[in-house]
Length: 70
Image (cartoon, rainbow, N blue to C red; front, side, top):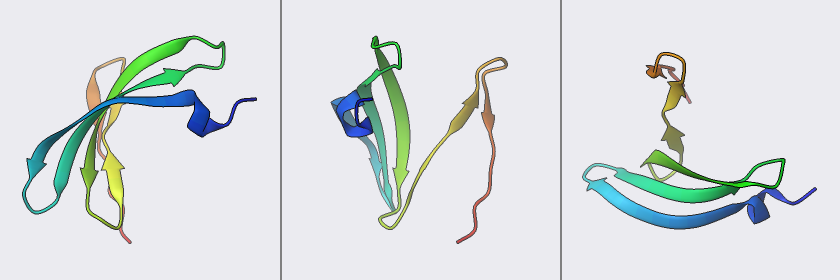
């Protein structure tokens, strides 16, 4: 099995907002278990000591809202 770091290739990172914290959109290629490469994109909210991603329910294209307390 290939290490996870070898299955991801960062293609592009764009800063969407640099206000209180940084909001970025990252496009990357991900190697699936069958060996095929798939292009994906994620929006990342970087708070410095942690980061979040928005989960999406594909069937209804609705965001999955979660709350995490540290």
